[in-house]
Length: 253
Image 1 (cartoon, one colour):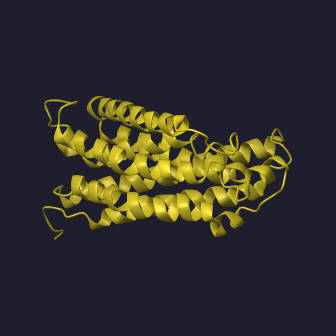
Image 2 (cartoon, rainbow, N blue to C red):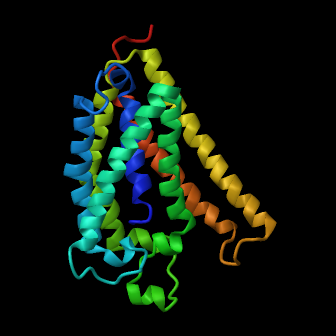
Image 3 (spheres, one colour):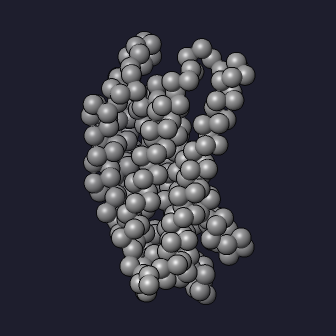
């Protein structure tokens, strides 16, 4: 979904920076270090091509049903430009936060970006997780939240995408985290978990407050908290659990 991809790219890059916090605090050149090369290779050589493939396969869904088909390569070229621009700007912002405000600030920004990306899909599932066609969408044909998980769209955007992007994403995250002490690793995981819980409570609380105030449209009922919670919890688990595989330089006694 092009509308949310800036958050997705920023979240990934910021997460890499938070994982490589120890190394990146020591580098002399912010824009001339090997860790930046690893990050950019992961985004440009894996993320962008696979995401563009998903765009080519699902142009209506990726453009929030503004377009039915992509007649030329201009949209794909624009998507690639968005990916690269967001990766570079995300790195710049994350490095500023890391060096000026510490690792906690980078963790917060990364988890918040993931939260916006996934929670928004749950909140606006009738558009961002719509399983029907372009014509069905504009004809007002309703599709359930659950139907998305049985569609080819889910297979393309989640199964295939994570089959290609998941290994380098987790591989680089674990590689950058390896070598810290057990205490540092526990602290990093604890901050990630607490930030994920806090962000989920904040987004759900804001929605609940808006619902109780009566300013939301009739179609926005309490039921939407269910897909929001599912997307938030599942994405947080997939983000954090693999980091338990990191190797520390000392064992707990």
